[in-house]
Image (tube, rainbow, N blue to C red; front, side, top):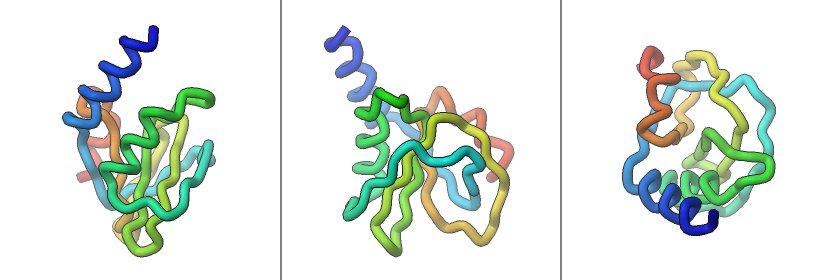
Length: 97
């Protein structure tokens, strides 16, 4: 089980999609402060297993990473946060950009 999880993390971190102009609808499962980049935020999301993180949103201005357990979102052109998901989940956000 642990080997599978590590492989999943390694593959996804190397192959994720980032979107902007997205406001998440679901409440966050956790907020992490002092995060340095969207890549680090995506990595934190992949390691969050209980509750599971499916989407990470990074605020570049405040260095806050917000983790969500779902894909529910709406288009919001005023939201400059970077939203990261694994490439195979990117179709949930493809119509927004």
